[in-house]
Image 1 (spheres, helix red, strand yellow):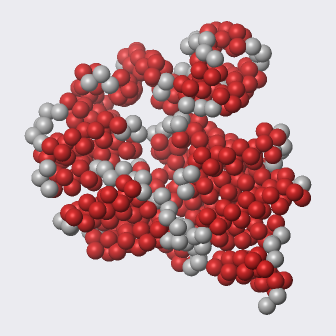
Image 2 (tube, one colour):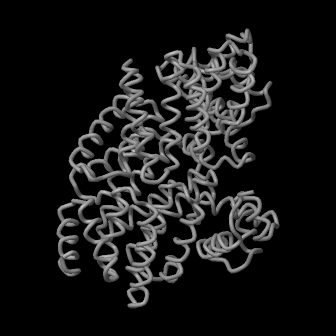
Image 3 (cartoon, one colour):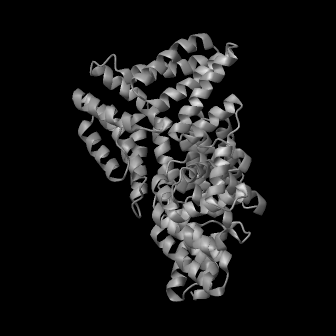
Length: 528
């Protein structure tokens, strides 16, 4: 078969989504005669979809260089962005950032009006997630989705909407978040997006449903993922995630033997043909099932493997120690894990194990447990429409958090107290509580909680007048405090160049040309 015939067959296989055949034909042709840029793009995508991620990255880089030599800057940047995308999925954020920076430079730092700018925004949102700035990530995903809509790019639109939906869940805006996740899935099920984007959207949506304990929705989308993969037999990257999700649901339903089989298959998928960081999730799921079945040695080894692949083996390992009657070790571990858990979704997953272990340790009056229990009880009573009973529990929770010197949790309780007062008709009391919560969140720099408290109280944040993002507000506060860009970068764990860009954007939005003028604006609007 001639090289030209191999290429033609490879293209035909690619069009009918026979990814393994497309990869085989195009890679064979490429060994005989280097492929043109368009066919390199096909080969890179096919290699990724059959699980050859390292090879895919190499071919994307080649396509990028070929297009750059031809002067096709935007398509060259798109190849760099797909490469960055694959690296983000693998958790290699530093390398992904490098390729994204190259694409940004090629696109003249935003001066070219093209859909690739939206993919840059999508990748930038992950950088915000990496530094814990969920509000900025949420806003940036929203901007990326708008670009996708403008240019009619369903891949970008679906990925960005799913990302924004996930961030809304983390910000506590559950109905809006779930609506966006479901909307992203509509495009996937309608076949409007590419397989690479579709698989990622499935995973984002299912994991988001699990975070909010919407198990029925998670089960429905996992079943949909299973059907999709059955229709795409050559796909490799997403089968591991699907098997992990299926194992979790089987465990919940009591089918432990089948769940263990699925978790083992997931581990095999993640480790072949090249190791994937998500293998840690598969090993953790195996460990959980071994623990429940009393197979402690196997559980220990699986938790160890999960840790090696970057998955925190908790709270399962602490529960294993409890099952082994090592109560003190279990208590010490779960205390440490709970103390370090800053994310609400993570804390909620730890709560049951924490209570079980501390009760076994005889720590019936642990102040942290009492505060958590009262906080949770009060929140549920408020949601059920019993503000009077909720206030009793919430006041107890606030006292507990104050005694523990936990200002963030105390402020969160005060928001709920304010809402309870409002429901009881005590509007002055509600405003006092919300004002105290706003002040505490501002002191802590808890931008998402501050924004929510402001919205609940009807107060508009001063920066809205200048249309500043949450990150720009943080930067402006530090500018007004007299800090240099380098000092701001150190404090916010950003690059100096990123802070330079934020400061430039702030000046443009406020219509000022100096740090002194920006500082004056900040004080005038009571920003500090």
